[in-house]
Image (cartoon, rainbow, N blue to C red; front, side, top):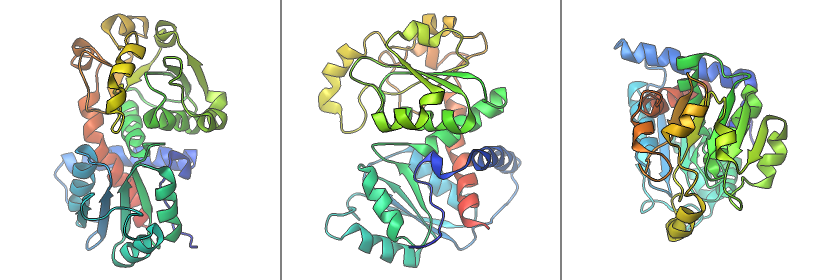
Length: 302
């Protein structure tokens, strides 16, 4: 319908563009930490549509727009429900006629694709059931800051083959690192993502082998939002997939630990790992702000 750039998955960016956004995020963080005023989005408005609740996604986008001199409107599940009450394409036309960018956090990925199809402004994926690309911008920024470029490194994903795992698979392809996915049987990533990224990934059920000589170990909660009724089944399936200090020991000495948060200490990660000196989860969480500001600038400032 139009030539607007959207950010629905990481693969909406080329490898060069992704690196550019990551490096720009690091620059914007320095500018903000120095207390400098930089307002490229003055009088611009971001509409934030939440079908799924969130702490980090809302605060980071809202703060980012404020720091850029713009404004963010928070629309809760009570205020707007995509496709319920009004067709998605109608919502897209109306919201994009009044605002400069839409950020959407929803369930079905097809809903955000439909919204983007009918939106006259950029649409940003704040999370869908399939992918979580904004988190990957923050994770990659964190790795680049701490260790330099990730190209050729080995990253281990421990746990569910979920939306975070899918976005890590996309990142592996775009930034050319090796991703070893350690998941219990029956919890592998979706086949379409395996097909897209097969040259850069390996799937195993042996968590210790997966972490051996790794440069970065990443995990996520065992039961994501909407899967609470599976909690007990998942606790059994994932019981040997906790990231512990023993697992960190088989990784490289300078390996980092990441988690997109919120974390359940004693489930997917032990307290001594997430609170330990290899963990960069707090820098990673803060970097949602800076990485998304770099993304907003990339999409909205020509």
